[in-house]
Image (tube, rainbow over all chains, first blue to last red; front, top):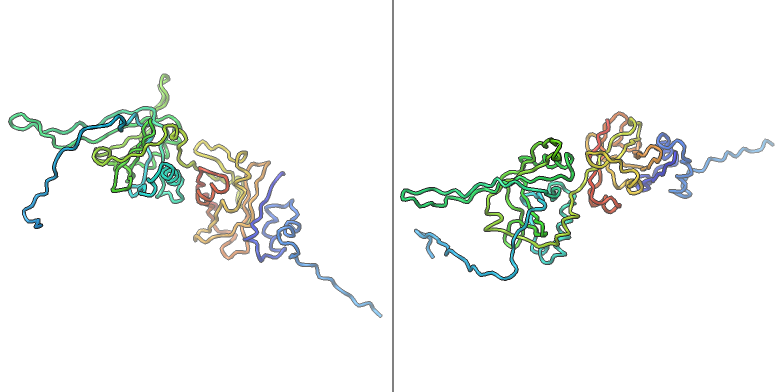
Length: 57
Length: 312
């Protein structure tokens, strides 16, 4: 379905990427919402936590 | 000077000379309904440009109660005005008791039943009116240095008449007024006759749900007037702006809109609501309002007002 979406950046200020996705996933199931969040708020997406395991000695 | 036993008598008569250019109203081409408190101010009457700007602004005023409402172009009138009332005195002289009321019925065609329905919403209300003749002269009532609408005794738009196969369906509105407003107190502004061809009131945009409401998602179609002409093809880009819409819950609290989408395949629009807002509840009812006409005009949707959509 061809669709254009305009996000309201002002209303979305302070929302986490996860909240952003939750709000919009049912309306725009085919949209790359993580990517859209990155476009709106560059560099603000939560980085996945890197688990550093100590090598067993 | 003492006012005791003093009757102020105004000297009668006025000079009766005239020049080569004078006010001679032509057939009425349009009526503009106006709130009785409405005035064109002295500053707005300072030039034709200022007046036209004020007139256009008033026709699309954000607040409906401050707005001017032009009727469709008038195609004919039936003059049912009352004759001057004379009393015949004992010796036979006829004494003028009072001048008769104007009782005029106007016929129109453009806008048909849709426009008639809108005019019927003014029935019995306390609105006044400006008249515009075919020369483009706007006629009202002079109120000091301001121009007021002529005072109406009533306005009434009756039911439409059915076409008889020879004549089109009949659409009419009628008004009644004392003669003072447009005689003793007449005020007028000369516009260009071509100007009234473009004069039109705001059009309604109706929103209807296109799919049942889902959690935080409202999808609707937008159509113009009672004929329901879909706006998508012409205005999808302009309507796709959160500033055009306001969403409130049943208590009247604003619910933030997080996005607007224009959906080409279904020719409808999607609004998403901030489901993390305290004003949002999953089961609550919502109202979608349009922004003020001035905001819509700023977004390229000029001459329209969005009607409220109830979402349950």
